[in-house]
Image 1 (cartoon, protein in one colour):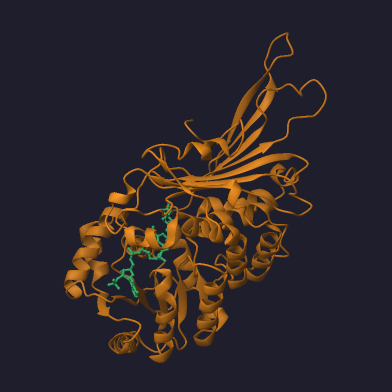
Image 2 (cartoon, protein in one colour):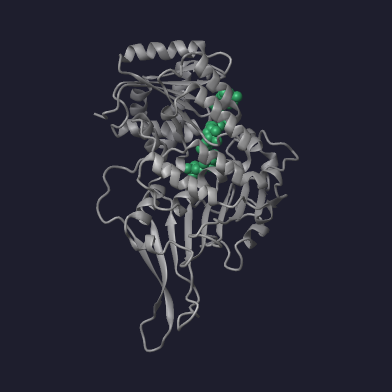
Length: 464
Ligand SMILES: NC(=O)C1=CN([C@@H]2O[C@H](COP(=O)(O)OP(=O)(O)OC[C@H]3O[C@@H](n4cnc5c(N)ncnc54)[C@H](OP(=O)(O)O)[C@@H]3O)[C@@H](O)[C@H]2O)C=CC1
Ligand SMILES: O=C1O[C@H](COP(=O)(O)O)[C@@H](O)[C@H](O)[C@H]1O
């Protein structure tokens, strides 16, 4: 028994890339784990019909089986409660009728969860339609990132949302906040361990948040042309990780306290400088479907950030992400200061803490230590931190975990509109004066200029 009331889940953008790769696999994982409502209907929606309910189920089934590993029989059992209904921002009448019918089938206690997995420019008009058709009434709404494309459009979108939905029903999703390792950052910092004690400019020399991706754009040409990697990844995933990593201790671990703590550090985040930002585009990107022959859209970004507060002043935070790179990795590396004086000031490599943003706890510490023997020689030794007990069940995938939160009305790990708006303001100088886009070979670590950005020590994960 999941303890979650009956639900009608409506997914707009149900034929898109996110839906097949992450969202539906997340839904199915919840169902397999007994965490999805026992009684439910899922209605996929979009402007174009995949053919009918059967065709939708069949196509989605092939994709979801590939990305989630669910077996054919289990999928068929789940898929019995799935249908498809065409809708767009001008016409949601049939969809509203389908949702009403599904709700009646499920009984009085049934709730409605609406998921907008559509491109940023489609959000505003879709929300208007949800209001006009009555679909919004009493429903919860999940909004995909990025929300808008700059400060003005984010504000406009937020106003559209507020006209139709009360804030307590709005869930702005950032799936990095559904990652076990990202949530663990809060425990590592505030759980009383040594990591919390040295989390200060006094001890920390620099920090890297590095999310290279091996995949290219996977058929998302139109999305990448309109959005680009900077808007897609920086004010969203990378900054949310940065926020949790650098915020002051929150007053509590509830939604309001976490948002206030993140907002406060985002207010101290210095607007990004175009001269300390590198944009790149992988060779061959212009030949992808939906991409302009002369496109200058960036598929790679690296930048340096500073937080102007007492804790972090002058500590460089280096952020990097890109498509078609040498390796897929999500890693945070904190480099500690070497002592300024005394016998160990000559120690070659400084101490480093590495947190991999993976499902399993993967934290490692490289620290100088004395090599056994008569001489005063030091070497770097490594300690791996691992969970000590058996882990209950399979770790939930980020979308599964966040959907589970939303189904239960828990907004703790969803973002606030004021954070979103502030982060667009931080990005504004780069959006207004973007650096020129440098080419880089597929399978590389990005343009040469980006490799020089962190200084002589380079990017810590490259080529390890
Ligand atoms: N793909 C990914 O890895 C991730 C994506 N996201 C976010 O999810 C959202 C969707 O991304 P993704 O699935 O990749 O995009 P896709 O382009 O693959 O799919 C978009 C979906 O939205 C529908 N759609 C497109 N335009 C409109 C429109 N104007 N009005 C209504 N519906 C529209 C499309 O169906 P139809 O044309 O039939 O309407 C399609 O089903 C984006 O905001 C993206 O940032 C977030 C995390 C990861
Ligand atoms: O939101 C997005 O995230 C993915 C990276 O997340 P992952 O969980 O698939 O590793 C990124 O590829 C995509 O461009 C972006 O829209």
